[in-house]
Image 1: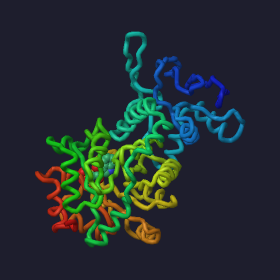
Image 2: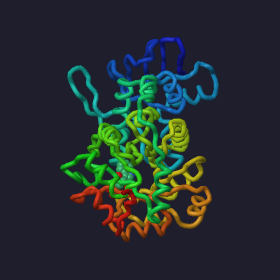
Image 3: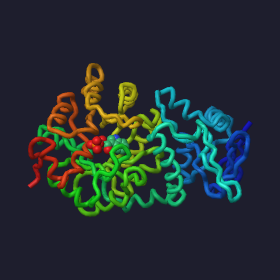
Image 4: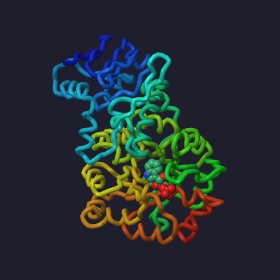
Length: 404
Ligand SMILES: O=P(O)(O)OC[C@@H](O)[C@@H](O)c1c[nH]c2ccccc12
């Protein structure tokens, strides 16, 4: 049985993962059990399992700890079960067809015991594919960032953020004016699937070139480790006076990241259905609405599309032609997912669909347009050109810039 305390109580007791905290609700130490062996993880917090209830708690406390009510209510008993078996969120995700595990089930493979580093690799702590690896690293990165800037501090910084721009409005306006899919042009230096895309990478220059040549919106990669992007790039582009609304291209797994993106000038964020269960998508889109941000909800297969179509209030769906687990690209995917009943629902709901990835030629653009997309997200084929901005006319087969 697990005893958990909240509010002014200083102690949290748990069987299984064990956390202790003091009044400030900052983690002092954590101990995990690996195969029955207790391992102290030191004073700094290791990534903790964060569930919906905790996100809500963190929203108000700005702290990252695993707490819940002492009341013996339903929420509490769910929480207790989570702590006991340690993998309820993944079970929930699995029911929705999500194969990606958000964190190593048995903790990270490396542990320090005294001066020695031990690597205990097993099925539960070895990522099964690149997407899983990215997310496990992201989880650690985000918990460190949150320690440095808790949510309550971050929220205050929002007042200094540049005003939000209408991302969906800009896409719709461009589509209407040009009769071609609106372009979200991506500022992307490298990717795990394609390696280095552009050595001489000047994000502001590239962004200006895109804007001048007819992009409706821009997408800026902010992940450093795998895409060599950064939040500095996002901020710099906004500060340089680029008017196109900006999508923060990040692996969002925590509400905190949405506030952070906004504080850095984002007008839209990406939510990946292959990673996020429905509850997260609902919760994150709610936060987006609160902050005035657009959410581009990305799907890759029929099941993800059906899940997302079942969620109210989604305005923007991206169909990724690239499978993020295998990196296979097939633009047929866009067509398949828009056929029949799904296409009808999308039209009824007036959802704007964005065709993403693997678009290189005017033929590709008309192919996805015929399939029903009203916007496209393009990175590689533009960024690799000598002049990425001027590459736009080549991609569309005509000049789509209407700006003087
Ligand atoms: O460079 P491409 O093939 O034109 O793809 C752009 C964009 O679709 C791709 O970067 C992307 C789509 N969804 C993502 C999720 C995470 C990182 C990157 C992506």
